[in-house]
Image (tube, rainbow, N blue to C red):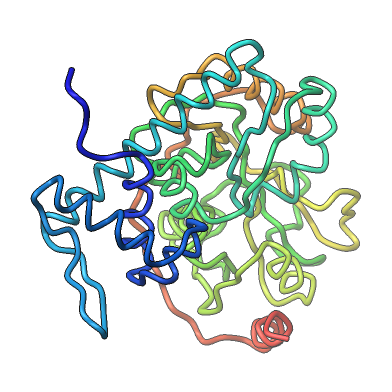
Length: 337
């Protein structure tokens, strides 16, 4: 096998320039001088016989050949990082640093219980958490910036390995005295018909799932779309409507005098929480072990693995609009402060 006409360092420089489209910024991110970075890229282009960038005094652009080259360079750099990690952790796969992404509708409700369990189970492993929305996490996973991600399988997550951790059923949250909270028994989803329901914005995968359920039952989605589950709680506590919550996120110690929480009759809508990672990842078995530990941190109401429910698995949403009421305006104003 002959020697390659480029180095990993040159690939890193090329990717850095492609991401920022500024040579100075790319040099700073790579901790080298701009002349050094420029010289290495010139050598790379000369060795390949291909122009990767078009540049003048005003701007830098990727050529068509450059776009294809950079896409493959990212894959090579990601695999090189995996190879280095494999060498460092072969003796103990539960050592070093594990980077895990987590969506906002899971992280604040699970991590406080999970962190001490992970520390006790893997004392030599440092877990670095990144909270973000599903799309950003899956992109970071594909690029190799994350080792794994904790998210809902009902979202678009691409071709990944997965370990299902739990089924997280939806619950109805209503203010005291609301008609939907009058019964102490499980609520049929059909009872949501014509109800006004507040949901998260669609950038959150749970917001999309809740909107699907509303569309299926002919419920009305309020025009105001919250950015967090905390905002939804505030709106419902003001007595202006009802909302849907994943059971994992229900505030502890809630009583009917504060908020009425009602479970749905089976087959209840739910999301499927799973740990996912890239196909071919070297520490597949170790991540499955970590997933089992994560499952031990879940509260009792989250049952074991099941297939996604009918209501939670569809991908297209309907967005009925309704005039924003006063409580929604107040909640939006509060979150903007």
